[in-house]
Every structure is written in structure tokens, then in C-alpha cells.
Image (cartoon, rainbow, N blue to C red):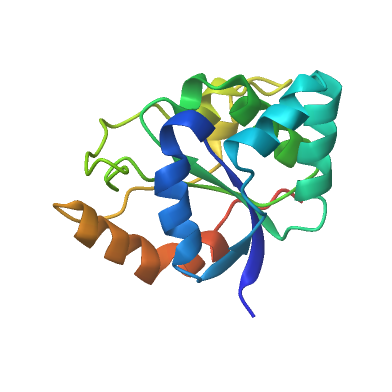
Length: 161
């Protein structure tokens, strides 16, 4: 059985790329909400979104932030990172900008979202959490790199004691 993880990502821009990662079948992630389901949760307000995140993350063994071009700018991604950190969930980042979207385009390299989450004692979550950049020169080879390495990357996720 694949390890159960919570995927954090920029929904509008990267859902297609994330679906490719999910379809690899090497990890078992939370169900991805379609746009209509997400809108139903979103319309209920921030408290409902926070509860959905908490519920989905509760029994997952790790949190995998799938990093695209704009992931670091997303407030809910930063919330998910902070929630995982505060609840001592292992955290790891994997860059997915090299995977093609539904139109066959890849994206530019994005900022590290972990560096956007400040710690109370100073520094950021980015000072601790590894971010992996798959190898490859095209979407197909990036896909193969993620598929071959994802379980090892998750196994090396940063674990707070």
C-alpha cells in the first residue's frame, strides 16, 4: 500500500500537474476536489477551509508541497505548511514546474514556499525542509524523475521532534 500523504499546491494553476503526480500511484494522496467541490468549501468561509485542511491532513503520514511557478504566493499553501509544521507532520517540497499542463506547456521556476512561512524563534520553515528539483529536459523526463524518486523524497521529509 502506498504511503498516505497530503498534497499542498496552487489549485488553479497546477491541478493538472498535481493530477499527473497522483496518477503515478506511488503515494496515496487526499482526494483532489474538482472546481465545483472546492467552490462549495470556499463559499463556507475561511473556517470551513481550515477545517477541511485539518481533516484531510489529520491521518496523513507526511505533507508534500508540489511547487509550481506561483505556489509560494498562495495563502492557503502557506497555511497548510504552517499547520503541518505546528502539528509536527513531516514536510517535503517537490518542484513540478517542469511537468506540462493540459495545453502542453511547462512553467517557470517558482520561489520556495517554505521560505515564506516564518518561525516564532526566527528563520523560516525553509531553513529545515528539503525541496527536490526533478531532473529532466522535458515533461516526460521530469515525470519519470518524480515517479522514480517521490517515495524516497517523502521518506527524507523533515520531521520535527
